[in-house]
Image (cartoon, rainbow, N blue to C red; front, side, top):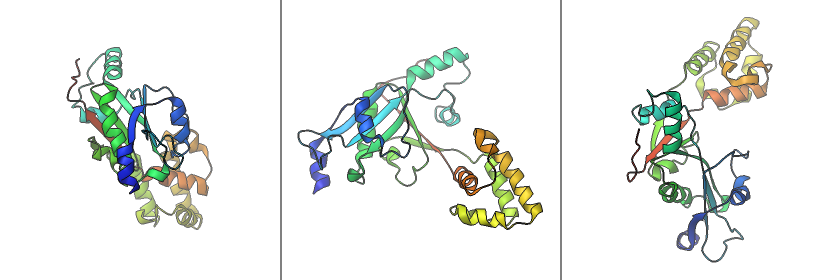
Length: 244
């Protein structure tokens, strides 16, 4: 009965940074959110549930200036402009969902979908976008009305997967960093030098991570990035038009 009662007794309202901080510990990226433009919360209308005054929170921020999948989703609408004009148009037209947190006690009730669906029009811009890695587990962005675009694999990821396959490490093992690490430890010197060179090449785009020595932590980091497939989401506010 909780889900039915909760659905009727909660409301969406404008929130504050303090509201976000109340639930931030439940987000997988419990770090500072930086500048934001809008915060909305799900909260009980009159009484609290399980001592929760805030059930969910969503944070909207300014968009990233360069996203390849945005260009695909908008048919290159924001390209071909002078850089200053392009940035001004992007900042005027787009907002990004930077955080979405539901109190763990209330997950599985469709509240994330509701929070996205009902707050996007309130931001009052033509385009809302978001990105996620775990979207295939719970595609609430799509359920809320957003359209998904999946990025293709990077050339560096394809190259490293092929290199690992050459030394006998199949992609099915990528979910087990310890086993992969142990297999590398028992390679011949020639094969180990080969794969460590390939690791170095792959890590070039990850800053200081490229300089770490071979370790289980490095292997775990590489495999997490190797299997990562971010998804870009976009929603168009049909009542607003983007003017160039």
